[in-house]
Length: 83
Image (cartoon, helix red, strand yellow):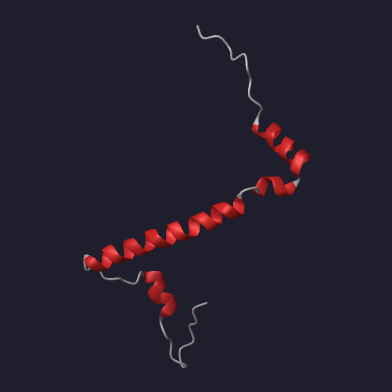
């Protein structure tokens, strides 16, 4: 039979309280700026590669039903408006 853990780790609530006590609300956002600065170019590159491959394969962009509905131009006489 397995023995119980001798070295218990703190709970999520205890860790959150400690962060708030020592650093305030800003402690929860530590490291946010570098993560965003790193994520932007990585995601932009991935999106560019994806679009390039789709173009290379000849995949056409098709409008979905919702996009067609939102971009559809209605005449002035039509009483139905898309919000």
